[in-house]
Image (cartoon, rainbow, N blue to C red):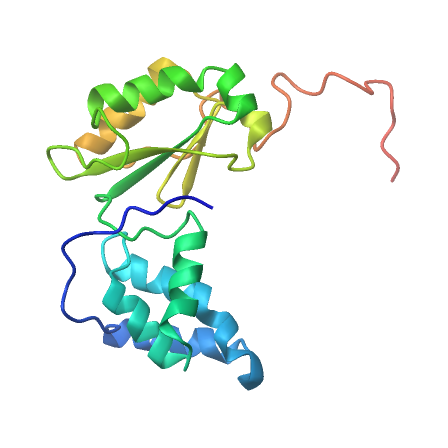
Length: 203
C-alpha cells in the first residue's frame, strides 16, 4: 500500500466511451450476478486506460454507481493498489523497483537517470508532459534485476546505459521494446543452463 498523490484539478464528469461500454459489458459477464462487485478492479483499469493513465474521482463515483457499491469501497481499492494512478502521470509512467535484489544490482543508477531526464522528484511530470517516475517495492522480477515497469510493460536486466536509452526514447514519444536488455529469454540463464548438465530429460 502506498500514499496516493491525488490530483488537485479534477474533471467535472466521466463516463465510458461507447467502445469501453462494450468492454465493460464483457467484463461484467465474467462475474456471477451475486459477485458483480468483484469486477471493480478491471473497471478501474478500464477507466485509467481511457483517461490517459490516471483515474479521476468522478470515475470512481461512476464505477461505484455502475456496481451499486459505496463510493468509499471503490476509493479504498483505487488507493490500495499501486497499479492505479489518481493523478496525471503523463503518457509514460515509469516505476523503478528499488527493493533489495534490484538495489544490489544498481537500481540507484536507474533512479539517477530518471532524475536527470524526467524530473528531479518523484510523481512530477516532465516538462514536456510525456513522463513521470516513482520508486516502488518489488515488482516480482527479482531474477532479472534491476528492472522497471513502464505502463504495462517490464524492462529487465538494465544498467545505467540501457536505462538512459529507454528514458531518452520515452521523452521523444517512442516506446522501446520491453523485456530483457541482456537478450535473455524470460529469466533463462545466459549462455544456456549452468547446472544439471548431465541430466537427461525424461521423454
